[in-house]
Image 1 (tube, rainbow, N blue to C red):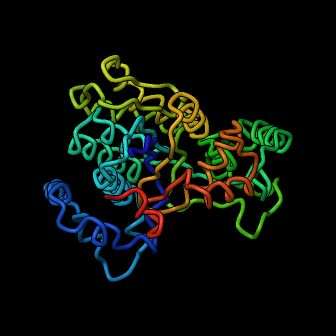
Image 2: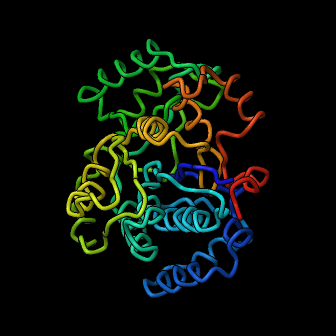
Length: 342
């Protein structure tokens, strides 16, 4: 019996110390990985297999955009190809960088075309990226929506932006907000909000002010370097960072090129809305998060809770549902991977 699933591709920050060796463990010898390595060598960059097989995880090497982005893309796309035959994908989405992986997973670009996009944008972000990002929770430990708390955080953001520095909403992760701006804006926000669990506000290393207008020069450079001819009609529906759906046979390729290398780079990425729209429009049996990493699971669950998906009203009900029959599977989790992988 087939399982109808929405595939979710992860973004930056998901290839960390525990993910070192992910490609070797799950995709050793994959022809596509060899092709990616050849493309990296041709560009004078370290092959992915070399990075993945390093003796130790080095943040100065593995977390920078020119290396992290292609590593994450390769893990996600090869995981998509490793799905079990009884899994019927009904749609694809992703978080931030995961949009590039989603394009390839849905057939809107070839695997090599997607690798060219992610490699180019990762290199541009590494070389020209400005500002940074901070993560801060907008729900409590029960994962239930807290509109007042969220509104208070947005008021703080609006008061800081343009007065004490630059601060914008970069990514809406459901229960977490990713804020981006210049160092001054990030510093004022850090001082203005309470510390939570000794972790938040959390500054993300080697991250620029993604999904804000500070990235406009990078978006322009990306459009100049990456032609419209890379794009083609997707074979699966894709939900983007606005919650908009790109349909097979009905996608305007010029618009897809413009969005991917325009608004997707410079405007807020509403991942929570993308998840909600995927749930409501396609009613999947399961959400599958491609590797690497497992950190996106909480954000997907929190996004589903915000729309009361299948009666989910908090962390406890989600955990109960997971024990009965998994609604959410992370391929980066060895135990859960067996559910999704062939």
